Length: 441
Image 1 (cartoon, helix red, strand yellow):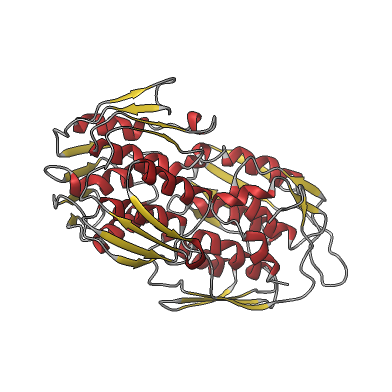
Image 2 (spheres, rainbow, N blue to C red):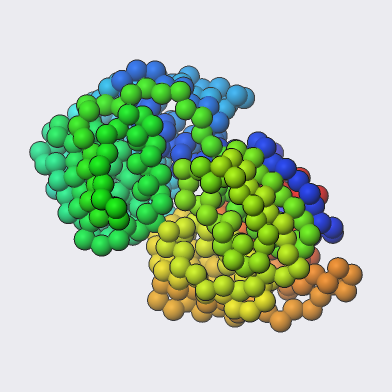
């Protein structure tokens, strides 16, 4: 669907009462499941698959690596015939755009092949550091070369046998580096043991990876705080029929919209306390700010209060929720501080800088102090009718970052005159986002 650019979004004029039962599948789970199915020994069928720019990049890359894929977008189904931990082709050139998960996961996966495999992306991807994955892969015996700049793609993997089975790792900028290593571990000759010298960044994402690996038959041992993780050698994964649950990160925008709209009620089905995704806990953040929340193993209910309160919170475990919370902070009573989110600097854009710029346009006082973001909401006039805060009119720049577009669309629902530049950037993870947003009306 073609969207005007910039895209004007009309504010909500009354509370809504809505149930969403068909939220698209999780990007994080989709790309992990696609890779694990490819590394399994036999045919896997995945349902509820997300079809977006990022998942299509992964599907295209797996096809280029020689895997047999049967894709039915209308039913959100993909069937993959895995090759027992092997790559079908002995060389490939993979262009992965700005898809961070695909880039990190396939860098590790290509070390299982016979090489050479080249991995590249758009100019922004060539700025996103990957050394914290390349270095441990080299320690395991992989031959990986940087083709342009040290520490960043493009890279060439001349796959050779993995000689080592253990790593000692300091905390990394991204949990995806750890997930990439873990996902290939059952296919390594002696499995893999990783001992961590500090806490794991975004630990819920690593837990999600491990739980999905177990669903595909991986044998895993770890201590209580995940400072040591051992993956047993099984040669490959077991093929599975697996349903991908809805995307908890994308659900956050609708949960936030309900929390900001006094008296509005939203129910999301298919997502709840049994979720594999750590970002489902964002609903607890909204509850702490004053929203009425009820959660079951498979549903989330939220009702907007008269006013949300500012909050001081560490979001290192949920960095993708920082932009959503930062936008909510515009309308909260009192300041909000979001701590320990320095890894936002190496996402699709420098998200800390982008948030500073766009929140400031809307009248907030914003300060970046180290890895913390401080937001003082503007003293706002109200619209006189419903008492809704009115932000300054603004065109919001999105920096080719889907989460900038989706989070600031929540602000536009609550104040007139806010337009979203380059709205099509949501295609990265949620092509139908604005159609879903219109359901709130």
